[in-house]
Length: 288
Ligand SMILES: NC(=O)c1ccc[n+]([C@@H]2O[C@H](COP(=O)([O-])OP(=O)(O)OC[C@H]3O[C@@H](n4cnc5c(N)ncnc54)[C@H](OP(=O)(O)O)[C@@H]3O)[C@@H](O)[C@H]2O)c1
Image (cartoon, rainbow, N blue to C red):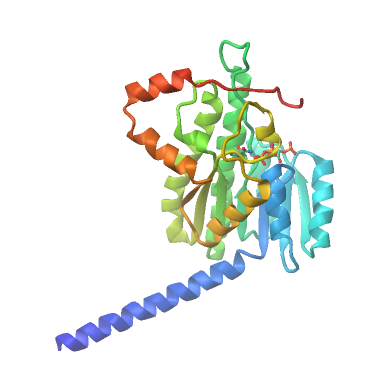
């Protein structure tokens, strides 16, 4: 009798496993079809679009720079993708939400990659970070992507699932006295991502947080000084795509930044503060 119960339990388990394998196959087929990328006019977003561009795929590419979007769209179309572009300024969260819902009405989205972002820090001559810049960083890097995540997840859940990636930063894991606005916006995004992942998983919506170190794009090219462990935008795109495919909760790359995060967590605050007070950084103004 006990043996029969055991066999029955194993059969139930294997049928559950088969069902979950079927579900994940269904999700991974679907995630390849219709993809929205914000910040597609920037370095990492553009590399993602080019890697995803293929016959059978629809790419919805967002950015502010119409010329860059047009050139990228042509390259993606040459690779066989169907492409739609949209100019959106993420400082206007309400407009961004309307745009997402409009795009999702016409192109039900399987994957949403919220890549757009802005970095800034206190310039050498300034006493404090600019208040307006801190506000902008909060809107572009945290508030609007968080709202877009929920809007996309709501639609995806109604269709049975989908995938979302949020592009954060390793800056989220350290107290950077010269970039409290940037670090804080990415730290908010990181906590949002880990909480939302738990909430959305039962709805079939998968969420991955990506935390890059230095990537060789216009953003990091403004930094004055070294950019250790620099990676190319294409290498970053490959890591992001692989993390999404494997439904990883969070990835930090390149790996030395994952080690740094652990060291930061293990270091007593008094020592950490003393070290971070001595760290300085500067970057060229935007648009230079
Ligand atoms: N590069 C790095 O070293 C690094 C490191 C860690 C994390 N990241 C993160 O990676 C993501 C992509 O950055 P990237 O390196 O590709 O930088 P990038 O080349 O400067 O591109 C930034 C993208 O964000 C868009 N964007 C900026 N402000 C916007 C706004 N107000 N509304 C709408 N779009 C806006 C830009 O659009 P337009 O160009 O059309 O204005 C551009 O497409 C960001 O979230 C960034 O924080 C980058």
